[in-house]
Image (cartoon, helix red, strand yellow):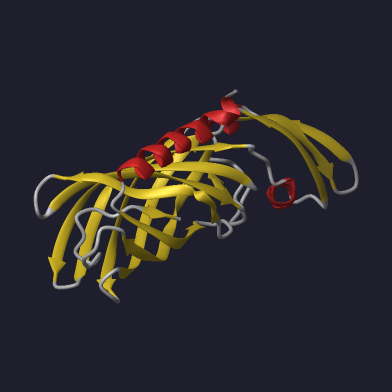
Length: 243
């Protein structure tokens, strides 16, 4: 049942947004993690910009995105590597952000920042990169890891900006970039076997139980916003985007 929880959360967000949206859109979003592989969203399970205006200049927004993560790095490990140890997997990402809005004639610039929750499921260890890191760490010729892990939710903070400008009366273009800094506990247990002339087995010590997934990187997107109620969607009342 735990595997279906992220889909249920996304389903509720999608249903609520579909019932209340005045603007809708389509965009292409990507996440470039630190020491990882570029990741892509799982369409149509991504909606962002769901929120409420506090006043003319401030609003609170949230949403949810389902990413297919190609590879994420780990930190707080004795093993050092710039290659990802986690992936591929699916990760649900839910931000909550305060947005400062500057609106003009057919153009809007948003500065945003806040916190986020993420949870990876269908997790996999990249044993190819792990074994390579063990060989470098132990100065061995061969190595073979056998790890188990405990998956946990993660949290972080982010900041970014978005530029939206009208192309026609009913169509606008959105350019957005966010920098994310987050982590989740991912304790490892097990052992690895290897050597050069002879083989030996090394059990993981307690330091490996402090391991964390590093959810740091750059998220960017480009999209189109369509107004369903007439008028220019550039200085919008509130947009709804599907990525």
